[in-house]
Length: 360
Image (cartoon, helix red, strand yellow):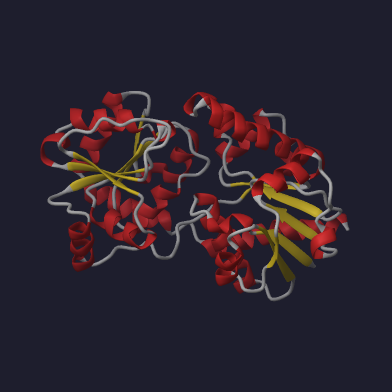
């Protein structure tokens, strides 16, 4: 078969970027039977894409134009650009018309389910774009890939046919592994981190940052540890105390050391489609406190302290719990993360592509 994949999003440094890059790299490694055509639309990031996938076919179609052409007007079949293909795996942004067996990945549905967590202008733009895209998906897509059963339930609740949905879990990048104390010390010096700390990844209303800070300050950890927040604040202003540090955006290569050096990861989000930081922390030997709702409980299972993200007391108790017995959580986390790999994700995705044969 000829399999085309839209890789336009690999340059943005998001979770969707890492998903696409890891998926495609592993598909190319395991599948020598089928032919892969990698498509990308961009005006300014051509060289960035080619540095990862030199064989990519790149066209000067930026996101705003692809939204207009394909989500709204729904003209210009993808075959006009890349030729005839048997399978076309679309991105999370644009849905070109195609006569191929269409597959798309829906990573999460936060803008539809929790619009109150986004500013009005942001949610208007995001929902508007995805509303048109999902309408095309509902009409034309043969298979929809989601990362968890929780996201599948959300999608079905929005009216999609559950028989077309396939659950394909994601995985942590291979760079996430426990690092040596020397590397931890080096990264801590880089960010002027002194003493022990808890870690939180992502700063916005969906990540529940305000409640996480309050829970930290309420717990005994607030007296002895620091809370280190990774990421740029989005859609909110954060009031920080003496023991709360915001590092901003950090290089990807520093994250394993930050996880490895943390006493725990506090990931009490209000909604996630998957929750990659949970697996990243497990792989680095970092205990995890996470939410008992959405996909997070599904991904973490019994390997993390599960809390009610809407209750500060519950998050605080989860912090106390992992600090009292971290080794048990570390051991369970190492065991749990072995269930996930990008090779497994690629093989399960390839199985979805192979479903095209029965429709040809």
